Image (cartoon, rainbow, N blue to C red):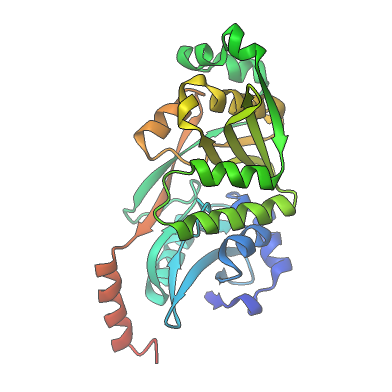
Length: 303
């Protein structure tokens, strides 16, 4: 049986216990991650006595919950001891029956009989760095061989949030509106304060040209953001930063690229020769939401 629990009804000890032993374990489903990215606006669907769980983030529009994956939270989905299509289908049915869904992302381990749209992600699994590097594409290896002038006048350095904030504001791309940038900065600041997030910058002649935001939790290092000064986009500072983090962590941790759906981003990530992983998503247009809203009204779900 599946139950829907509001935030204040969740047994977080049982919830985190289910995540810890789950086959699909993801840092993005943890309470600490979701509390920050959703502002504590998330429910949980629970199968039996926390045998399987499914976090459900939402936004409120005129008091109505609309399911929407928050910014920089790539994957959620069902978490259980063993991934089970039948159980996953039950969660999928319950989600669609109980909520207005704008966008919900499952994880790459979840499998379904239903035909769902998928998106791409890339992962590098723990291994000896020399073997990981040997698989890089010839182009990526060339990029990492900085010429003498750049090598002699550049350095990598961890920076504090305030420095990162200025660089992000000046160089962020891909966000639809100013509110999204504010939300991104607020989220990154909270993660940095909790010591889950680090900012690593590439300096050229004492000026930041590239920066990445790296989140660490469970057995994963996740790339939550790459920011570049367009004037130096061809200098390979971003490649150098990512390669540095891989070198320092890949022996014991998964490196999660957190994306790959845009052609230019996919091409860049593929240069590191990661494994391609597809994850299922539900994405509905505003028109579909309006139709679903009318259907929910007829059933009295908002009364």
